Structure formats: structure tokens, C-alpha cells
Image (cartoon, rainbow, N blue to C red; front, side):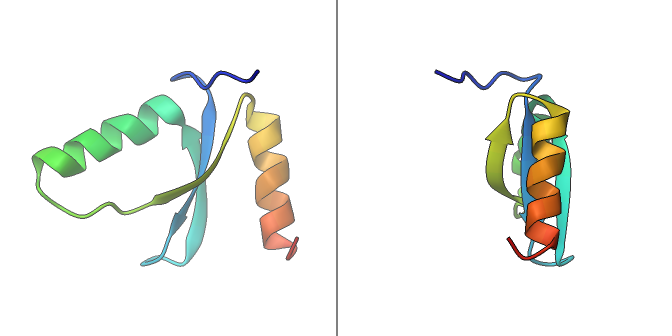
Length: 67
């Protein structure tokens, strides 16, 4: 069983910027909380969570290569 922690990684998609972003879950949550406090919309949509940066990077590569 995989457990996602704040030190895990998330691959996100920005529909406004039309780009993929990879960050630590902790950073995503901090950004989401700030957007909540500022009453703004969410800039990125989470696509997938990963235990390591390498797994997240491989997923980004697959997305960018159409797979």
C-alpha cells in the first residue's frame, strides 16, 4: 500500500497556463491554502501522486510524449 505524505510528489495540470507542474505535496497544499485564504480559484489540478521525484518525472515524460 502506498501512503502519500507531505514529502511525496504531485503532478499537476494548469488549464490556464496549459502546462504540467511537478511539486511536493506539501507545496501544493500550502498553495491551495493560500488560494483559499485569498478566495481565488485553484491554479493547478492534481493528476497523480508519487512517492519519489523520479516516479513523478517519469509520469511527466509519458504525458509529454503522448502516453
